[in-house]
Image (cartoon, helix red, strand yellow):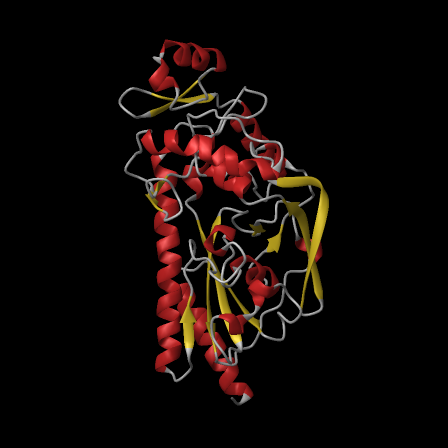
Length: 353
């Protein structure tokens, strides 16, 4: 493609993405991603791929604090599901536009799309293409200590999407490291009941000759176990996620397989709301988002981060009423609630001898 045609098509695809609902848009290419992890290999999904369009959509900022202080469960779940759906739809529309222009393109799902050819198959939960690596390399955002993508406008409260194409697009520049607001305050780790992020060890990813660092993540089952709702009581026992369960959260990664086996039957039996979604790996296939705190606590304003962490710590402990609804109560009242249950019902929320 001639340079002016590349520039014209790049401008149009960025503009189209924004018209469709994307808040932030970037372009990564095979050259800017060179040397990156396997999940940055665009040819994995499209032989001959040259470029990727990556974008971020802000979650509804008004419902974040009601969710983390545990006063509104439904609104965040609905917004999260529908924002993911919008991201997948934008990817499809963009890819079809490029296809109609004569460039082979592949739309990518925003979430729940895993490689099947790894050692553990879909259980490894490795994406075909990493939206966040593409996003940080193309300047949509930057990596925080948590490894989440942070944006100057919306913090980490965004959903990412991308598509891969054979079109030769003009890459956008990454954000200057000096403009990364992450100061390693570690409110992300303080708000994570699973211990997913290593508090000390960092890893570095190199893409196109540029380095990007964040905390080493422990086994992804930690996040699955807590954010997925199998358990949620913080080790302090003073607060929890939106999960009413309090099965033990293992200290070692290798202990999570057994923990899932123990907690899965109760997970499947516990009542679920109608605001969740279907995930093929979950018992009964239904999942609700009960945490996401490491993502939602992170705001560009450090004072807001501190306030949100305090909200989480003061939010109490979740219980599930007999009608299936969730409520937050004090740790003492949660203990009284558990003691009032018959043995069979109590076993839905904790190990019972």
